[in-house]
Amino acid sequence: MALESCKFGTICRRFKPHLLMVLTQIGYTFLYFLTEASFNRGMNPHVHITYRHIVAGVVMLPFAYFLERKVRPKLTLRLFIEIFVLSFLGVGLTLNMYFASLRYTSPTFIASFVNTIASLTFIIAVVLRLEVVNVASPRGMAKILGTLVSLAGVMTMTLYKGPLLRNPWGAVVHIHGNTIHENWLKGSILTVASCITWSIWYIMQAFTLKKYPAQLSLTTWMSFIGAAQSAVFTACIEHKRAAWTIGLDINLWCIIYAGVVCSGLIIFIQLWCTEEKGPVFVTMFNPLSTVLVAVLAYFVLGEGLYIGSIVGGAIAIIGLYLLLWGKEGDQEVHIKSQEPLHLTYEEQKETKLHVITSEEKALQMDP
Image (cartoon, rainbow, N blue to C red; front, top):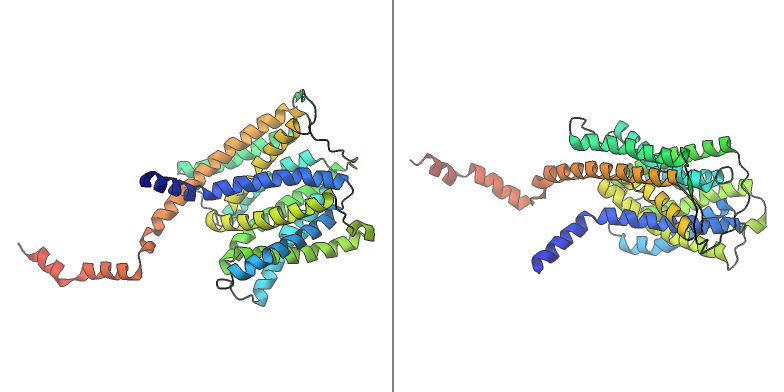
């Protein structure tokens, strides 16, 4: 019984980052439907970004202050500037471009295109030598092949529709949408730009965490700084005071959920997983959210589901598993290479004494 419990605990520890990342994608899936309902009720997306990060900062502040006060590094001016840039890439610039692109394209297009972040992050990580790719190794080839297959799945979901599968029983929940002012050129440029800056944000997290290894505090700083940046941007383009007014409706609940769960808890989890597994690992799970959104939209909202979405989603998941398999190989090699470092100073000292001890030498010379 104890052995089974030990094995179960080992498995849980090994796959803890995987489970957490799956949960984050489930959290983002619910956010998609909440924000769609909120924006259709007239909520300004940029005001939403500002409020949700204020909520995230307020919620995360006490946890960061009390739980990390002994391990939190001193915040220097140089480090603050780095966190400011990190917040700008992750909140102030990226999210505002992302939600602005919703006005000119369709949510399905954006949800599909965001999956290219994993491939972009992988390419940038390889260039910056955060990821090592050994083309002579099966696992190295799996990472390359997995990235290409996942990207092919994303492109299939984006460019190929195929036959439409209609929901036979209708919508369980109705979300009435507003008319989208289509401008695919402007929307595509904003979407591509947001994906690039999002990828750079994931990469930069890995560097910042080495200098500031306090995930709760970093999440809090990014929330408050990102909220301030977004507030300045929103004030420049939105001059109506009514846009900042929030009532006791779906807009308020969407802000609370987005702030507490997505901009607070999920960002903290992603930072932890980035430190444990790297930025590429975190972005590999993005296709799951697209698949979950398509499935729930079909069964709950009664939306049609195209064959292209099903085929592309399946291809993207296959690519995800290939990339995960390749990444697990890196983890095993890393663990083996770190095994000698797990010895304590006394154990290393005893090992060295054992090599040079005179008794051992005398025994070896005795016939």
